[in-house]
Image (cartoon, rainbow, N blue to C red; front, side, top):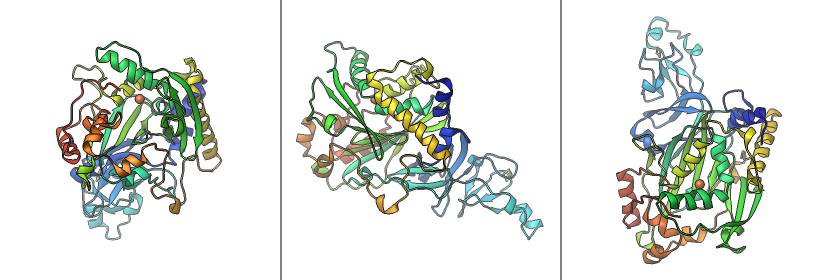
Amino acid sequence: MLSADKNRQLTEVGPGTPMGEVMRRHWHPVAAVDALAREPIQPVRLLGEDWVLFRDRSGAYGLVERQCAHRRADLAHGYVEDQGIRCHYHGWQFAPDGRCIAQPYEDTVDPARRLRAKASLKAGRVRALAGVLWAYVGPLPAPELPDWEPFHWPNGFVQIVFAEVPCNWLQAQENSIDPVHFEWMHANWGRRLAGRDGPPAPKHLQLAFEEFEHGFIYKRISEDTDANNPLWTVGRVCLWPHGFFLGDHFEWRVPVDDTTTLSVLWSYIRVPNESEPFVQTEIPSWTAPTRRPDGRWITSHVINQDIVAWVGQGAIADRTRETLGASDRGIAMIRRQYANDIEAVAAGRDPKGVMREPAANHAVPLPSDHRDFFRDGLPREQYLRHPKWQLLLQQFVFHAGQPDHVKRACEAALGVPQLDPAVVDL
Ligand code: FES
Ligand SMILES: [Fe+2]
């Protein structure tokens, strides 16, 4: 349970808020490379501020405040030039770093161009990595953009899925250190959703939570596993400050504003040996629906189920009225760490998870129990019989609504027809 003040402090992310200042020390996945290649301008809301993200005709990315410095037109309606973006209203042009580089009428009547210097836009930094466009809007110098090992795994079909979630980021991130929900929400509730009864999922018997350099790790033993199982020896990663790494895929919960989160999935599916070598020329991205046409929430896929839980906790979960138990020790640990991060930033130090050393930032390893499989793969027949991997090989279990062209590209890469599960049974 938290006080109302503490709850506000950990959840609010606007400019000048304590947690907002922490989040402004990190890079955030906000868009995808393929989307900007198709449509070079995309509005982005991040940490309670509005930006416009663009890829100019030279291929340079920019992130500038969304309203034009002239008379505040919306630069999301602008158009890109060889350098930067031009406002559609009176043609002022801004470089990717926010400098005003053209004011057509003013330039004509004042060859000294004195007004340009007064018309800069606030600009963030943008980097492309692993098909994702990452934004940094904090103080300079920007830290390293983490380059995780899975971004370098070969022979995989990668896709990026976005979903806008109408609730605060922290309750979504608390789900990254919540082992027991797999048993209840995904397994037991998932079965009921599928219209099945039958025996409940194996019960959790033991949990452990540990801190490490890049976040926290949770470990679990259930009735069907023991202390030799990778779920105990390796565990899963609550990646700092707003990610989740499950050994094969990443999820991030990006704070858009206090009551909106951008859920970002980076999914890697190993191709069978028969499909090697597979080199992906473009990583597809798509935006997943969260509701049915009748307004009801989609509950058929894993992250859809997570989203229903997060949204159900309220726009900002009321942590003054919760009852934490032994299953929530990890939740308490990460809240303490966010509070420490707030103190660190207030004292002028970096918060947890900020990397400053370029030499240490290449294919940074994370705990994963599946490295051999990702490196060596499996022959198709064996893969199709594997208790865990056959599920991912044959169907996209994470989000409902995978577009046909992504499904076809996945089938072509894997050489396996993709099923369309009504309800995932984990
Ligand atoms: S408002 Fe953008 S150029 Fe005038
Ligand atoms: Fe989940």
